[in-house]
Image 1: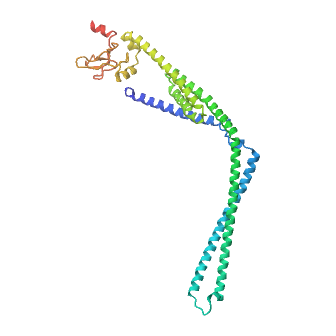
Image 2 (image 1 turned 120 degrees about the horizontal axis):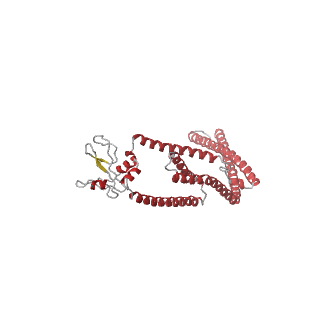
Image 3 (image 1 turned 180 degrees about the horizontal axis):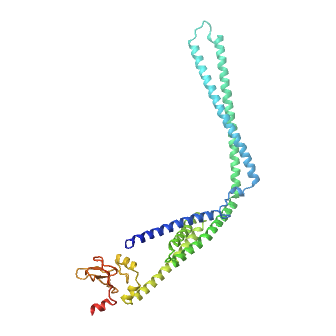
Length: 358
């Protein structure tokens, strides 16, 4: 379509689309800002609001105390394990040293009765006692930590029971909130969609159509895209229902427009060629000729042959090609100047067929 337009006209059409898209973008941003700040739209609902506050507070207090105890016991357990590891390593090292010393020692007396042997044995016994004490402390801390974990599990089960008791009221409140948000957005977006439909039907030929088109794009985006995240479980019925109604109305409009167009074309074809030419816009005639259709009846132009060039429309008889009066070059009958010599075109006679016959 752009090939038959002047360069400025192409730029104007491109600029008009840019204006429409930019205008729609700003409208979308403004709509988000307005809807987002409406009272009651973004009020959150949590299940804790519907649980017994006294029992919830007690459970939270006990849980916090148990969590602190768990952290303290975990730290103490880690220290006890480190102490046990150190005591075990010390006893093992001293035991290996003692065994090596016994194996290499020579004495005239019984090694088992030697005072040095007795002293080292007493040291080993002390190290072993320290290891057993560290092991006992570790086991005690393990048992206490297990009790704390079991208590935490009990509190968690109690909280789950409270949540289960409050779930039905929470679901009803959440449903009411979704319904409220959906209703607010639907009340805003549905009239926008209706206004957009009215603009498409009534203002499509207006000189301000680029702005109207931007509003139409904004309305379509607001209803069919932005409304989707806020649709409740049954919201799809509303969306598709509106889509069915809108597409049905659009179908009726297209059918009636087509019937009016066919009736208007039949009426035009009954007019003389001069009357039809007078009703044709110059740029529109060139567009239709460029796409290979007759500007008068909009039917395909018959292909030219060597014996019979297609100078006239075979359907309505309108002159499509003629010859320059100065250079006799064959040219488009709608050109205002001859493309071969630049001579101003002489329009075909009022009744070309009758004149030719005469």
